[in-house]
Image (cartoon, rainbow, N blue to C red; front, top):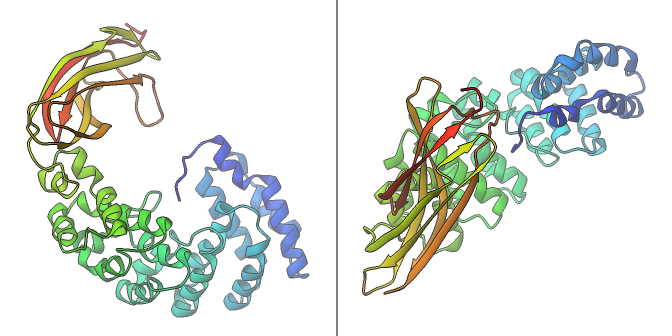
Length: 368
């Protein structure tokens, strides 16, 4: 699920949500002990993160619903359409993932059902970890399902580096284990599914770039759905200037261009201000060229060393003798994922993976 941990997000599982679930369960299962459920749920709730709150609901359900696993899951199946928030429904497959491994096939069918309400992508990984081949065989059948939610689960659930979950080391080491699923989905009509397939392949490029490139080379890339997946699957390699990846999107040739008037302004700025980079690009070719233009920011680290990050800037077809002006402004401010440090931050302009210009700005973080 695409989400970011923050105060607002963890409030998906606030006290009102737990009370609402308790009320619905009491209507479905009159013997439900709502008072005990809420007592378990609320203990230290304020200090728990989003995923900890989700797991807390699973624990409260397990403590208050029948000891008979199948009976409880049938109750949860009835609960699913009564929960009014997609992410909140993740507690239902989470229960299956935590308590259903001994009833493998029946539990996998429950995950298939629950994924239509939110996603079972996290829970299914418990089954992949327990019995990889058995789970993948079932997920391969899911990849041919009529439901786009189920087909997407087939790909997303076995992503080797799924965010917010543990890595699937076996698939990281041997990506071909999941290849039959990806092949079934390579021209899927659903964008929801295609995004998952592309993300799965992008995960694999981190450790097996040539495997992905070789596989995509065998795909019918004249099909628009295949081409869409390939482009997005290769985004990390394209940013890194991989020539084979650039060739897939028609930008593998060295650019025949002249880059001029490159400027980084202002030269000195404070944290929270914006830096702007601008330049002109002129064709030196008698034919049109497909160009991927990125910029690489060399962030200063606490140690004084630098770490580079590539940002997308522009993709275009430059006609013969054509000249274009390019400009980009970026805010230099702290995020939870990046803290800035004072010093000289260099910026490179990359065209089809080649560095054609380099400049810099000096950052003052206000603590010097």
